[in-house]
Image (cartoon, helix red, strand yellow):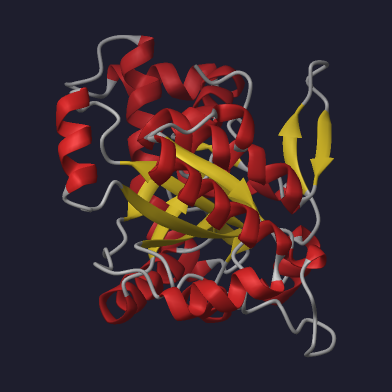
Length: 313
């Protein structure tokens, strides 16, 4: 009997609601569960010669059938970024965001599932920024800032994480000294708004929160542990064209595998008026400004002053 791949994939995911699996994980399950059908498929193919080839063929076919499956079955959903993950959920987009707020799945030493809040993403982002870009980062806690605007008054004001890039990290000392004498730029300042899940229900709110919170910096990014839906990523690309905020897909399991899905558009100048407002109302942001000033004065940035993880070299 021939294997009905679409029906098989949908049925497998339906039995595991909300569990996110890669195409390879699904393909390996199909290969183990339907050995007869898989061997028949291999024999009928002119290009598939080994079992490994067959699994790879299944992976490709699952990806190719994704658009049709999503169109026919709204409960069949997929994340964006590498590796794409597939899952079955009867929750609405709004309900998915509500369920995700405050928790994100991550493996533990015992291979069980631990629930981590958004705050657990910050050190993972800091590790990625340091290892990928050499950016010194600092957490901005809005609860440590003055709040003159009532509940959620700071939500659209402060980014979750800020960063400083040392442009001359690889320069010769004479070049560094020369740049200092010219009073030229030695840094780029970064700003990040972090979310657990972005989908069609909250994509614009998340994006414009990042726009608002990052308007002062050279580089502004929206960061998400999960991005659900091709339409969501398409919307973010359209918004980037107008506003220039970038997008990072943060891999909570392996931060080094995180990806810049949409590069940010650089702003040439810092909005110091906005930076002054943030520093006036936020002790964390004021400390960040002091560290940047210290770097310009000494030419050095100590990792212990920043949120650079101890595991980073």
